[in-house]
Image (cartoon, rainbow, N blue to C red):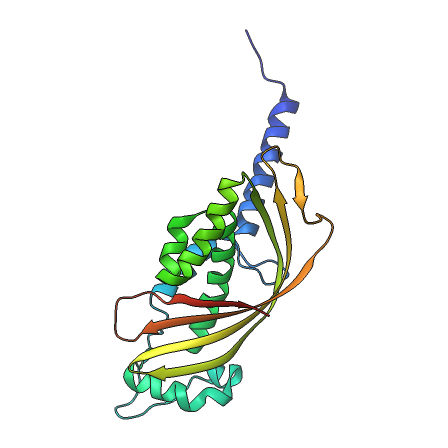
Length: 220
């Protein structure tokens, strides 16, 4: 009769405990502030309707304390937005915009077209799709590692015809490798971390069921 060694049982218990600890750690932010996959799903849901449940006195339009700390120069336009939608939260938008950045570049690298269609408008999606099609045609894969996203900044906020448009600056550290069908690196260096600046523009029609969409991408 086959018997299991006590040593094997102990090793199995230790391995299971380590995996459990890894899961709990990966469900939180890391030391660089990057939001990991289990958390992204929740914040992505917020990107569909980046707003906050707030209760304001009748006729009173005010900003949350954290919003004033983030971007006081945009106080006037934010108040205009919140006259139209009192639940609008700049803080919540920034949280969602960070996660959207991570999701979009990861989806672009892995040719995840379904995710990109949810977060990009038609014209921007076509630009991404063209690059993905070129990679597929040339049997090239993009191996992208987001090392850190240290800076996320609002460059401008515009509000017109009940549409909010927000220009964002992202500064990130990335490792980008192009590989052929055999996994050989044809462009890039696995030991080199690139500092990349991107200017992205998000837009949303207030009081609609539309998502916030990425409508423009420019590299610095």
